[in-house]
Image (cartoon, rainbow, N blue to C red; front, side, top):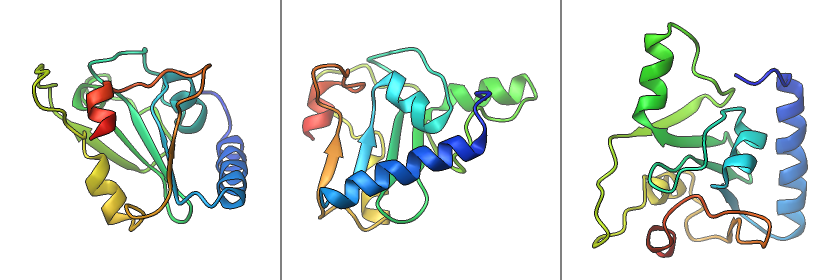
Length: 139
């Protein structure tokens, strides 16, 4: 895990939620590898086929959705999973198909947190990189 103290992640989440509250945003979806690391402490390479996703609801605990191998490697190395986020969801090997977009478990997590009908923000700025395929984002 990152050498950043847990208190710093707590501060980052608090600041993000203050900004979300100002803009009436119910949940933030983070997919850019740099932003994902900034909030989760889990360093991943930018990878279009195996996204890493963090969902930050305005209230409640954040969650991350990552490739199952990230967890498997930590177990093989007998190390702790490299993120402070407790709610970790793992998806299996990627179905390499362009015909049907998938949601990686995002929708079900948003529904579980009861923010799926609210305002959801995602990184689409000029200095960020959408860390999931466009068809999957659209879905």
